Image 1 (tube, protein in one colour):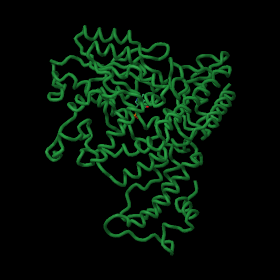
Image 2 (image 1 turned 90 degrees about the horizontal axis):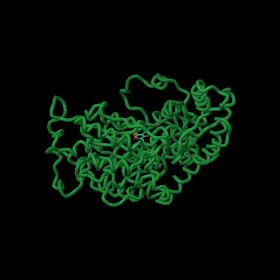
Image 3 (image 1 turned 60 degrees about the vertical axis):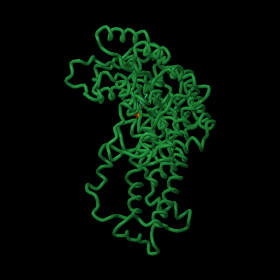
Image 4 (image 1 turned 135 degrees about the vertical axis):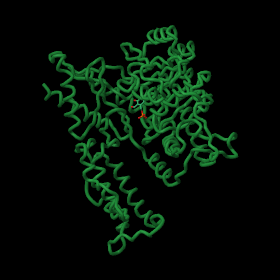
Length: 508
Ligand code: PLP
């Protein structure tokens, strides 16, 4: 990292130092109002040059920073400045203090969790959204942002190959999308009067039960906690040898609950579980939900996005029978955080759960237009559709499919390399762009394998070239290689494999 890069880059481009006057002194800010437009433009141009270089060469920084907790904090002043500082100095500090202290999600060696990268069209969308600063809470507060969100979400529905009858909106995260879906599931039982009377102190309510597999994301637990349903009323259903929720166990659990006087209100099925990216049998689960009057929410935060690839549409088989689906463009559609799309076939129920219009927000278009605040907790809403719309337009349906297809192919090739190497094992089916694997040679005692695989991961991650994360699969420490970054190539995957083999060799 070289100090002064913001200015240096621009100097090369324009031959000038655009951030200072002739004497090298930045002009003083006016006493009131914003930075003058000309100065903003100079900084913005320099910054965009820096951003372009960053994206062109994201490997300049190690994927994992060499910092310990508190290191960055110690370099930040404890109190804000009384007098404004020149933008140039602030941006220099971003380079000097912030960027080297970041885990670089845009680094092509980022293979942890579910890898994702930003893309140029989405970045432009974010810049524009901050510039326009509209708040898409009501149609009136942002007519075009509201209608673009509706259109963009519908484009995504079409890209996923889903039929008519679904509509949706954009949230920050899948955690919130799932919580909203479960709130709607509860509101689908209006006779319980939970919206009006709450749940606390009531003896007339049955336990309201939610079901998800043992591999469902922790956001399901957080949702039931937040909604006051109680974590004990989230029933975790076991999985089969391919890590899929077992419908026979689900059915038994629902029946037992009904017999005990409980009420099954929702099942969360996952398409692409966090640990191993397994796919729950949505169709069979949907049939059980229909039988018990339970809402089916599908968490396709990562895996659902694969349906953008026409030959991968089967991953959403049965979702047409579900009540809601969450997919995250910020996980696997080259859109920077935050962008999570909640689709539902029952927007009326979602609206019943959340619509509340105080007098000051009443408008003449109250009933004739969509007011997106009606579909969730939050009032103020970022203009998130802009970046997603720009991604869809800039890459097109075929371009997006081609990119995801290539990542799925890369993961398949990596899995083949692992399988072909003695001592290494792929431990879960590879449906998407995630490979779960471990080093488990027969001559190494099973009791030592967890520690060895952890040390392989730590060693590889210390290289600064790649970053892998782990899962515990069937009780064993497992390495995960997740491809989702649009700058990742086969060379990066090969490099990761080389580092893994080397680390395993020296772990003996
Ligand atoms: N669902 C699944 C399957 C996930 O893997 C994750 C995060 O990794 C989430 C939900 C939560 O996503 P978010 O960070 O958007 O809340």
